[in-house]
Length: 473
Image 1 (cartoon, rainbow, N blue to C red):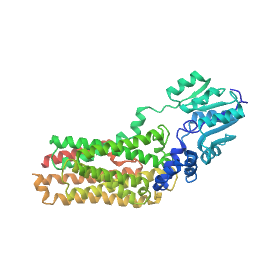
Image 2: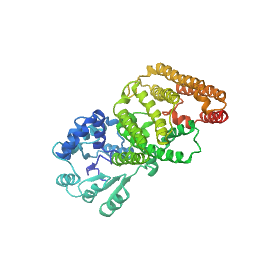
Image 3: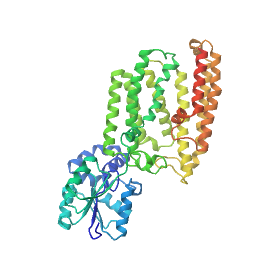
Image 4: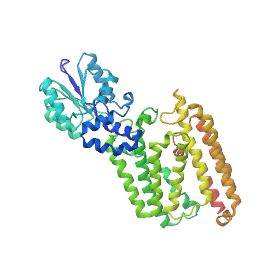
């Protein structure tokens, strides 16, 4: 390629895997959710006005954006050879200039301002006026770029769709194609966190505590409720990922999540985020109005946690414990099983302990990276000792609740050999103590429930508890 020919580079989907308009939109809503009522007014005044108003109110860490690194290395090589690089994008001039300043390889920036939205057609007019047909090379990725490619001397495509690549090959001289594999359908399964559905098996706990595990009508209602909860939970996970993009990109493990890494576009993820809870709530409404109410409360609490509550010390832990407990309550409602005071009390204490495990494991990871504070959360590394103490105490309190329950008259109505149940207490004591030792060593994952479901020792303890319950019955 001639070094005298300027190379014009698109931004969204090309230089970066994401889209700055959608990223800045979520950043604005995280700052204040009430902006959702102002955004339609800005859009009514024009897309350029919308971009300008949003960009003026958000701070984007350009160093954390998901750049297409192979392509970026190519651009740096071209710049090193003395080639003129121009960034041309429909994004706001403020954001585009921020990206250009961060990279330091572009000699000029063409972007939307308050009054003019730089569309593909507008881009082409400017390119032809300044450089003439075939007087520039152009890099793009989308269908709208097909309007520009035929007038470019050489076309370069970055992560194009199959149809875009074929059409560009017919109308343009395609010089290079950069592709970074996204994994297709598997990536979407990762995004909705199918593996996290295992946590929703908590819905079936009331079925077992009521000794109704052979009641097929209840099991079928439980499975339908399980499906509804899975759909709503996945929608909540997507919502959380969009609002946590900067934090996730700054995290050693979470930076590889599909949206943080740019493997899935924010627009397609947003559509899925809305559809999944809608489907889940529809199923819940058909099943039982009380279950529908509990599931709605779960969604509201999840949204509140993501938008605001997760930033407040200890409030976030209470909410996490509540979200676990709500799963058990939802199971009782959908299968029409009354939950005892003892079981609710046990759930609150054990899930509060597990929520603190989650926070402590994150702080241990942060400590290993040499940082002192969790980004977006009101915790510092020196809080670890206090959080450990609170978590262990809460876990042990759950065992005390079990012990008091075993000494209550309620037990004799359900079990013929209630004394056998006392064997559960040392098993729980061992499990909780081991969980906290693992957390202190930095061997705990971000989610203790998922850790327990995969951990051989935890699986063995669950099996022993089941055997003990059967013997007691």
